[in-house]
Image 1 (tube, rainbow, N blue to C red):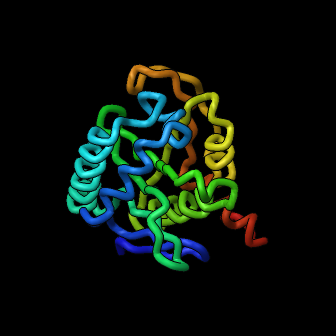
Image 2 (cartoon, rainbow, N blue to C red):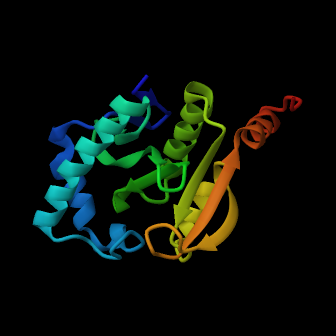
Image 3 (cartoon, one colour):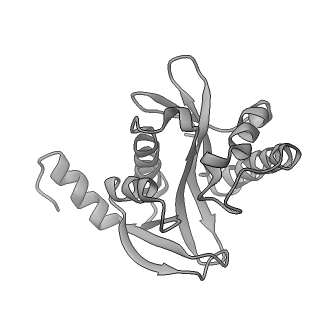
Length: 187
């Protein structure tokens, strides 16, 4: 199951034809301000990065059965970002990640996509824990992680040599929160 639909989004595997749209996101200083290196990439570098990421995203899917999706608006099919799950071998964790076009910020789409990724990770893949990382100054991204059930664990620079706010959720806690939101007894 490599495609998911939410009320507003279609999450699907990337195609190389998505590279120009993904590269446009990577060149934008506002979109990239909290990502490494803290600003948009030069056009040629963004194009190279987009193609490499698409190749890596799809190889991850092929190898592990989960990965990063292209985010499309269901209405019209416009590529608006990326979201999904990524195995981080260097720390032995699976990360939920998302990056959206600034034209759709504030509509709850990051939350919708990230929640779908968590559901996929826990229910379909059978993960026991999922983590998320943000720049400590990125309050909007931290809110997304908290809305989908991840809790702040610590500030640390042990990953990518940059200070990050680490968040995580365990399967049991996620299931309990899901049950509460549906008014069901946890158990």
